Amino acid sequence: MLDPGREQLDLAPHLTHAADPDGDADAAAMFARQARGLFAPLPGGRPTFGFRDGAIWFHAELFNHDRREERWLLVLDYPLVDQVDVYLRYPDGRIEHMASGDTLPFSARSIRYRHPNFWIALPQRSEVDLLVRVASRSSLQAPMTLYTPKAFAEMERDMQLGIGLFYGILLALLAYNLVLWLTLRDPGYLWYTLHVSGFGLVMFCLNGLAFEYLWPDSPRLANLAIPLSMALSQVVMHQFCRAFLELRERQPLADRISLGFIAFFALMGLAAFVLEYRMAVLPMTLAVFPGVLFILTVAVNAIRHGYAPAKIFLTAWAFLLLGTAFYASVSFGVLPKTFITEYGIQLGSALEMILLSFALAFRYARLRFENERLVREHNEQLERHVARRTSELSTALEQLAEANQRLRESSRRDALTGLFNRRHFREMFEHQLHDAAETRRPLTVMLLDLDHFKDVNDTWGHLAGDECLRWMGRCLEETLGPHGGLLARFGGEEFVAVVPDVDGEAAIQLAERLRLRVCADPVRYAGSQIPLSTSIGIHVVRAGDGARVDDALHRADDALYAAKNRGRNCVQVAFETSL
Image 1 (cartoon, rainbow, N blue to C red):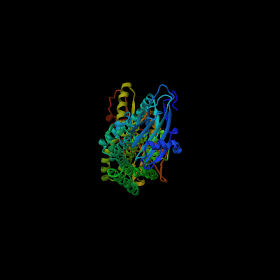
Image 2 (spheres, rainbow, N blue to C red):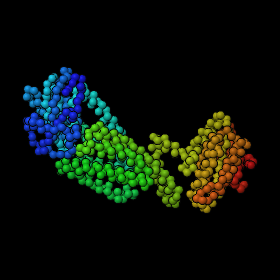
Image 3 (tube, rainbow, N blue to C red):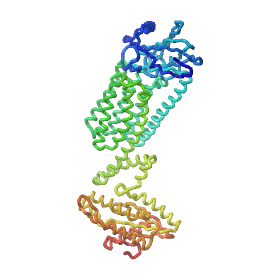
Image 4 (cartoon, rainbow, N blue to C red):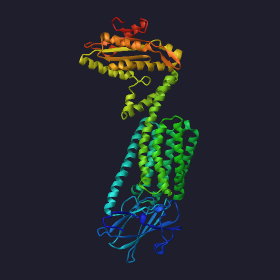
């Protein structure tokens, strides 16, 4: 019943159906069969029948109570239907027939819309028999909805907005990562870019948009594009997983299985040119399920073996795989056709693409830290090789740093101690000298060196030496940090600090307190206690000195060497008598 005020109606609760296994029955025979009560309700109330031969006929009786609306649009809300025949039998016995589907040119549809649709006339207070024949080599789904012109325009407006946002996200990610690949030449970005392209093409075909915009006059190409795009997207998807999860090095057996999936989908893509549509699509659709389980398994296994980027990868991939599984389940009639099962793949894939971009950035950051560790531990020859690779990664990270605040901050820090590095220290010290000159405030520059640090490395090893450097960094932060000191690791076992508004005796006392703090407790490492001491050189920059960065550092460095010449473990003021 189309009551006044109703603008759309889902026909599924009102439909009965009958199977036509051979697909050769005509409308007259099926009208007669329905009149004998041989049509049955929809199984489970859902018009989804999976992959099957022949045709399915649907019937509904329509009665229009609305005096204002006699022209309605019947939409079959599934684009991949080969043949749709609509028969309308009016009270005077007249029968109208309309046909659509992707075996006909796109222009055969009543309006330009990605789903098969038909304008139907429903006179006031007249009962009209609706008979619909649906046949498809793809999954047979026939969700049907009646719309008034106004209701359809509003529905399509919202739907086009959602589709536009989805493809806008894909295009943005495609362009962004394509630029990164052209700049960095990293294979991960190439396979990611191809993955976005392949998946976008699949969705463009499955949504019926490719038939509408790319080849509207070629039904054969519209049908061929679906298995070809499916094969392409699956090949690239598994190849991206291989590259990102580093399966060849980390999981050789899984890598061979992944190559098997790639070979299977590549062969099915080639076979689509000679095989019947269903024989090409059905095996690939079935292969989605083991492909889902395989990717989940290798990702979980990578996490168990300590590969940190796999955590983001698994989170991202779960959205896409869940949506893909939903879509395939609807194709086989396992799950009902709802908004989540029909469009979950678009929602999940958008989130997956975004998260995978973050995963690639995280992967680069992890490689950077690994290279820093290799530089410290390998010999001079290997260091030159790693330095070259680190330089390449640094270039990539500098580009990513423009969009990532945390990476900008980490580039200013020494990886071992957490203090500022030498480069950032010089920039900050330059600003402090300028400010101190304008406000006429003093600055105290302290240059520190761990005494006999080579003996520490030779006796307890370089890892123990690293722990001593970290300990020295903590001592600086605890002693000089509360005074607003600018702290940095200057190089090797040398550290530098600039303390504002401190000079004279106060500067000497502060340096002496730091020296005593370092000597107070030995460093505990691997059951050993390592005693440390430090030599400190001080130079006070006073208002009006006109000192530059290098001048101040040279004077503090002269004081430091004077402290070492005095026997180490002491404080020396530049051109003054030390304690």
